[in-house]
Image (cartoon, rainbow over all chains, first blue to last red; front, side, top):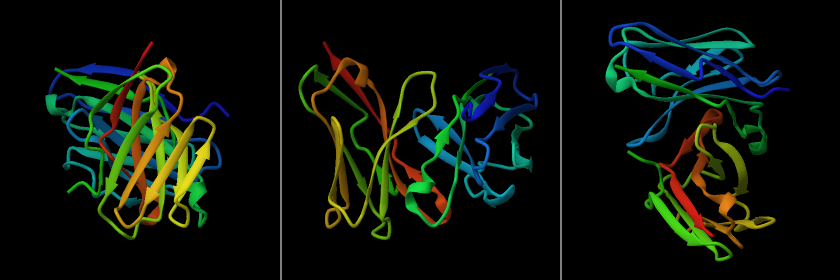
Length: 117
Length: 111
């Protein structure tokens, strides 16, 4: 398996524009997570899905952020409209997720570095 | 409200010496902990984990210690190598398979 795939790797956009980040989880993983990494707050969980269903979106900063998982092999994180304070690295991760704690190890993608000017 | 804290943003160690990275947590219900390592321009990768039924887990040069009464864990790297230079994140497994991460500690191992 190629691991978790994210695109694009880098995105530079202007304030007010719509940004869409994409993620392909590892095949067979039932859980998908979206994180944001900043210097101030480290790795923050934004939202996660189980079997394509959003379970907890309490980390989504505001209504400008939305995430979807239309099928088991694809998820998107959208920011509309984008603002300079959204500049960060966004990671997608997936895990098997089961009753065994060791199955909750998350595998991360390489991240998307977003810059909003 | 940080449930998992890494109070040292950075650590510098000489090659061959021991690196000790610390992590504190506030929720006594946490019973599984993980350490992740992150290189620049890459995603975090799993390094080692420990269950609360143990107080030590060892994997080669890496050992994690858990002190439940103090709600504290630490990662020891012996001997440290320049390739260990990275950001290390401590994480606790929460309900629903969520991981709660600390802010990370940047380790620099100097030759």
